[in-house]
Length: 608
Image (cartoon, rainbow, N blue to C red; front, top):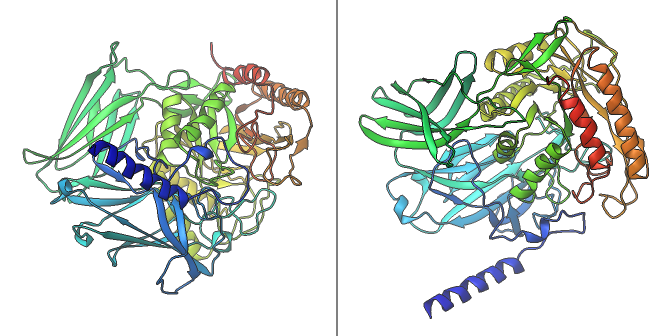
């Protein structure tokens, strides 16, 4: 009887929640949208590279209100489904905010009694852009930056029951100088709908002690057969010891320890790896597991589970003196789509983890080995799937800052933006936070500080800092931007077909964007009466023929010096109709078999 009563109560609660939620508007939806409920929205563990067992997901229905900037809030307008931004359909709101207003959130939460006496951390995956947080009317922290996670220790602000969390967000979108990517208050052409507020998972986590691991940096070295583990420990003291255990799955699927390491005083741990360690590549995306334990004296105070890959990104000259991109000391032609990571129903936020994985799987199916993540940063789970499935990532810095439009016809003499000191500081702060956030991701091989000179400034300084801060990856100074003789790569753009109009004998030469072949599919467009591509065709055959024509041209340019290429793009984005797939991911617009065949020829060009 108790079970029946409990089931009835759960059903009633579920029905009440659904009565408060429905996607807003009549915009295009993905197949996953119909499966989303307030109870099941984004329940996946949000930080795969540093996991702990005890956590609580705070996604679901929150109260919200949009009000003039600086106005006190005494009531809320309705419910919003977190973690979807307020402008999206899946939020259930679909309203604009603007620079003159603020977005407020509120929700109640409980802390399990078994967490009593421990430290409670509140995590945000990402909030765009300026965020202030209160727990029980006690301000617990602030953050600026729309693309990186942040955390707060809220232990002292908690009550035994009925805790109230409030969040205030202000976001000027493209009317400010902060990084905002492709967001625009008046979407058109290549500029898309604004994203304001919470757009990644919000969650609670418990740690046993005031001393705990805040972050891990993991640096593999395949040449010296080592892996460096750098634990960033809160309240570290001289009696702190760190133990690292590296393991791999055996033939029976069980974990087998392959190496160990220790350090005292919470210092860096260098772990010797087997000489025959398995190397990560798109063909064999092998990941090692790693457990990191922290002891204070002889007492275990924290423990996290992570993973890494043994791999190396570098450049080297071939027998003809051409600088080539290298993976694990072997030449590789990196080839993949421009992936903007936008969703017709969730905007910046994929409907679910399955959808997030789908785009990466399709990219592999198409025969690519790389993705250029274009002026956006993704949730940690996106990079996890790239690591697991085997896709190299070029990571852009989201564009921002006032400055000239892009100029790509200058060689080593392009104009640069003149930013205010505040704008420069914001860029540098957020770029460092992005690199810190993604530092240990195995699949990221290239950092891209600028795109097409959008807000490009002090290029030599920015590139030098990026190279020195992370010496394990390559730096592409400005993809299609104003070119300076710095970094590892010269990157040109050419639409629609591949061309090589610049060449640098001292760096790897790549075609950072080309293609953009458009095809409109009725019933699968963002705005039925609008849409464009760099070239446009009306049938699968014509689009595929053109794609193959361009790909063969690219293939012939590899011996002349190209070492990578990026095709525009994975999916349609709002009124851009030049995707390999429609915006709702329902239709592949080319013949998959034919593009896979030519793509594999390009991706496998250097294989013996």
